[in-house]
Amino acid sequence: MRFLLHVTPTVQRFNQLIREGKADALIKKILKELKPEATYFAEFRGERSWILVVNLKDSSEMPKFAEPFFLGFDAEVEFHPVMLVEDLQKAGIKKLAKKWK
Image (cartoon, rainbow, N blue to C red; front, side):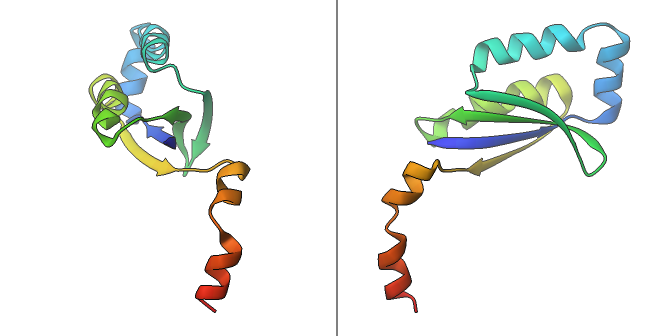
């Protein structure tokens, strides 16, 4: 199942890793391991954020995707299930609309 993984590292930990010259290598190591479909770096609520699009076969894979960020960056990690337009088309929106008028 496709998820949007929203990662927010703590400012203190990330600043420390930047000052030590270790942030880039750790990010590359994690991304090489997780192989996300896409990765974006942005700002949310005034904080550094990373958005990854990942595919999980099973909920038991959540630690595989979250722990590198928890342990490496003291990060907050959120999983949000997402769909492609093709998935939405399979959902049967018309039937649901009729059922729940």
